[in-house]
Length: 210
Length: 210
Image (tube, rainbow over all chains, first blue to last red; front, side, top):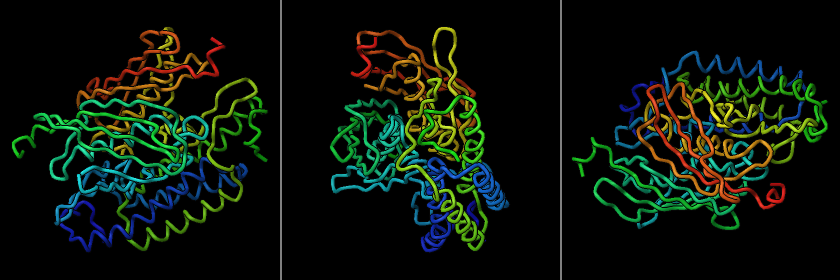
């Protein structure tokens, strides 16, 4: 039995085991999302597929957590934002991004955005670029111990971003008291498309720990 | 047979008929996305559901458009952004928002965000607020004839946004040449949470039509 409500009690091995159960499900639903947008099969078949999906959803809901997923921690203290719409491995909305860090602490990520993220025909929705950059700048602002939350963020769109393979990165420019200034950008295969700068705030409860 | 590749040739009645086919499918997948994040059923059952989803996806992909959905127009000239990740009725990632306009031309929308949009536990991901505001400001900037694209957008986070019923609105502050200045905000049940201002640009191809 998988007790997600008590996942904070699980060891890293157990977390790995649970990841292996749920991650493939989210990957399959992610693929279904894409097919739902692009399918041209006819009305009867769509109705039949819809009915089967409703039955599967009911099956999954037979036992589920109340409300949203939240953020869980393992006994080792690892942060499990599995429901997150940017990085969450259990969230079919998330591409999902895998955030990496270089030696200087800068955050970067390489990922793919297809049909579900389209705004202008063939291009990434401008707000999706904002979603990604907000998240990547936030990761760069946080040192892995103390979370920091977006105060303000400004996005400058140099040109439209082509759907396909994308890259985002961000690094801390400077820190002044509770404010951390972060800059970053999004790039498609032809270069930088959106520049971002943000001010991130250390939450009150974490300030004494600094 | 439904020919989405030729949907520009369809009358409003035919578009309504096609909407009635595909919109319920996207609604069901949207519900499945939520269940995928929240389910606690055990490993065997998850694996069985996953296998069935893969089969349904293959069924939908038996006939599908190449690439992303794009934006289609009806014979009546109505814009059908059905694949859009904010307003697309065929995109399970979209809540979807329904944008309304008041007499002054301001854009507003009331919608709900649950588990798939969560960042901090119980709250909307800050980047999701950015996604919504980018879109709503863009709608306010466009007069329904000439589209305008985001040049820059600045978001100021006053506090975290609670998951649940939300409201967003935006209006044109002023227009100077090709630049349209728009302001707006996002609110949860307790009031305004994020303020936004953006500069939207009339694309070159549309400037002569002004």
